[in-house]
Amino acid sequence: MTDQPQDAYAIGVDFGTLSGRAVVVRVSDGAELADAEHVYPHAVMDTTLTAGDDQVLPPEWALQVPADYVDVLKNAVPQAVTAAGIDPAKVIGIGIDFTASTVLPVRADGTPLCEEEQFANRPHAYVKLWKHHAAQPHADRINALAEERGEAWLPRYGGLISSEWQYAKALQLLEEDREIYDATDHWVEAADWIVWQLCGQYAANACTAGYKGIYQDGAYPSEEFLGALNPDFASFPAEKLPQEIHPLGSRAGSLTAEAARWTGLPEGIAVAVGNVDAHVTLPAANAVAPGKLVLIMGTSTCHVVNSEELHEVPGMCGVVDGGVSAGRYGYEAGQSGVGDIFGHFVATSVPAAYAQAAEAAGQSLHAYLTELAAAQPVGAHGLVALDWHNGNRSVLVDTELSGLVLGQTLATRPEDVYRALLEATAFGTRTIVEAFVSSGVPIDELVVAGGLLKNEFLMQVYADVTGLPLSTIVSTQGPALGSAIHAAVAAGAYPDVQVAGESMGARVVGAYQPDPQAKAAYDELYAEYTQLHDYFGRGGNDVMRRLKKIRREALASVADTDDGAAPALQVPEELA
Image (cartoon, rainbow, N blue to C red; front, top):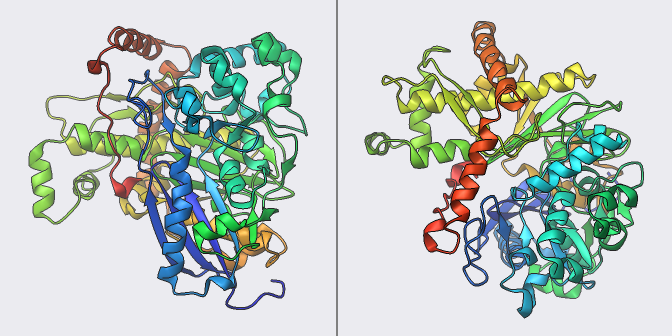
């Protein structure tokens, strides 16, 4: 640690799917003094454009309002500082992380197009959240052409580009709302946009550029490739993407006077380059060293690990030089639905009698179902499920896939299905682990962060299914702490992210150990999961895609009426 006051502080702000959280962290040892949360007023607009004219949105859309993010700075940050009882003058830096790819069209000065009156009722003018999947047909075209042409960057992403990323969403914009596309000066990641609001400078970060923007070896995909998709798309990177990429932990700029008024922090302090919520968590868990697969488990799960070597891993979300920390290759994989799956089941499929019993026992319905499920021997429910209720991110990279529970009978109970869904997400993680290991990326430890780590039964299932020791992050605000660590590095308190993580981050090593007997029992179920995984996911049966097509056609037929919109389900707070 360089010469900094022992009572210096850093602020980390984690922008999640439904809210933003700010934490005040002591730079010397990573102690979290206070935190505060601000819920986005518009939440996720996935059925209607509530910020505009309330028009019904097509299936698979997920939009947000950028002003909601600024409100986090105006509310959560000063609330956290006040709660911490510190002198704001002793804050030396602020850092942020974001979901990704969460992207928005803006003018040259950073003004979001949705904030202009003429575009307020145009869905394409708003933020496209990470789980906006309506660009899947565009992703399919990108993947088919890249494979046909043998594009060198494609293996860096496991052979497939996701509809969640920048290019598919941008191509959808170009082809569905050309006026908005033409008005877009910057197609900017929300992480970079909020940093822009803090320091007044557009400083694109290496993490989102590499993982979500197909930026490899100092270049974007060629004009020739993009022009073959659509002639008007050839100039997309040159015209609308950043040309200068900034390393993680570097200083994007200094806090402006306006942002200082919003946050109550000193003008001129360091603003760190933005980051992705999953990747920023590794130093918070002191897990920057190779072989530590960090699982950030909440509504979805991101899997991130560092390695000394470059390998091509089928179905990975990406490998980026310096994508997590300088000098190493950062690998990412993910599961699009985890906590969302559990929350959806509890919200839609559990009898009232269970809710009454849970209330009588003083438990949440999730805790009550977990207790019942945990009492069963492995395999006693006779079920196996596929965890694709929100599509598959890794290793199949296909948002057209859907969930499945096989083996139900008239004797099947809610706790049986609940346990099968918990196990399915563990099987999905094991599939990812095996893809890494078989490709030359060693994994010797699982490290869990996020809201789901408090479910002890679920953690044990993951250890048993994978056969790996499972460690848990100490912080309850892993991404926000990670952002504060990057802020400390940007302010000069530490030389790099790994050194900062060793002082400010922590994990409980080996908190859960795999049980050999349970592992053997799960091996049998996992074999069945793998057969279903390959049958439905690798072309054995295309029924899931066909059903989604039928659904889209049916909804499109009633899109002009209010009946065409299904009510949105909100994930319980304990899963968010």
